[in-house]
Amino acid sequence: MTDLTEKWKKGELPCGWYYVKGNRAEGIYAYTAEYLNNMYRPRNGEKIIEQVPSYDEWQQLKELLKECLENITNSWDSFIDIAAGGETAELIEKINQVLGEE
Image (cartoon, rainbow, N blue to C red; front, side, top):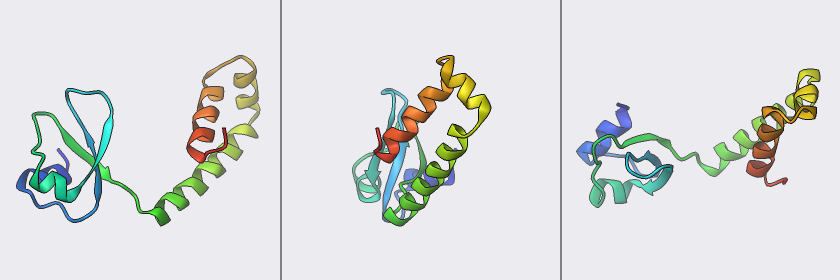
């Protein structure tokens, strides 16, 4: 269990938004610390994965994704995998979706 989950259980999360992985519904959801500390108590198996990055951190992450995309698309192995309809094409599509360049 993460340190953030322990803080949540005590109602002591610092201000911000957090990603929560539930145990009943599939997916990961984002909530404010205020909501988590005061309104939403953790159910069995739920945990906080990480704090949502700030806008500046998100921009740095997008730049890293762009670099990854460039490296993937310039790789000979990737070219062969894409031509064969492999997983690389799906990865490139997902990265482009995140970057907003579908």
